[in-house]
Image: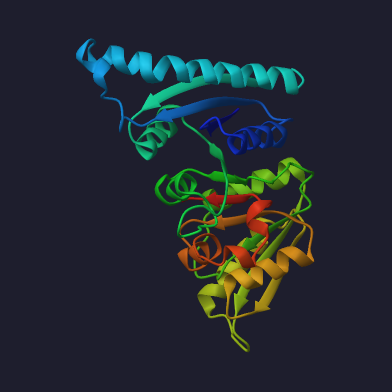
Length: 280
């Protein structure tokens, strides 16, 4: 049984991520935890003079959050057929967002976090929003980031950008393996480098390991020449039927260039292609 954490801020893009998660795991036995985290930055109000802090938190945060989470459960029951393999629980918390995520990942033995992002927001125009960016950088749990315009369809191809410098252990690649077992997409391993660049022995060993590990599935390797990782990925995604981009969080050389840069207006995949980020 998979345990899935679904953080929500009650926005439509977080609802979109919930929909994606339910369809993604439609054929699997899962426990879903719907989590809303409140911050306490404005918790102390004039009312605090007339009630203790716990009562204030319960009245101001916990009860309204539980009510909203129950509305999501009702919406799920109305828009999705009953799935006996899916079980739902609601969680409310207050404090720092990342601290709460980490706590529940540990306590509930979470296998995957699935959360939505509205994409380019704020002055930096990051590909993913700040909460999603913090989760994939600071929480060591496989995370699926679902952009605002992403809709679940049959997975045909997963792009896996890599520079082959990272040694891939079985546990690190396991989330990709399980997704391929579940949905039967082809895996497209993409290396982006300079002209006439040759792999060293370590890179070749890591490439061979990937090939051996996924030998039971359809996997193809591509070497693209481009000075810009994000431009190369954009062209690759546009030229193929890519439904997901998988990356290893530790591989910052690719990870940051694809997700954390300011060229939002020049790329399109950030609004409709989910990102799977895996941790050691």
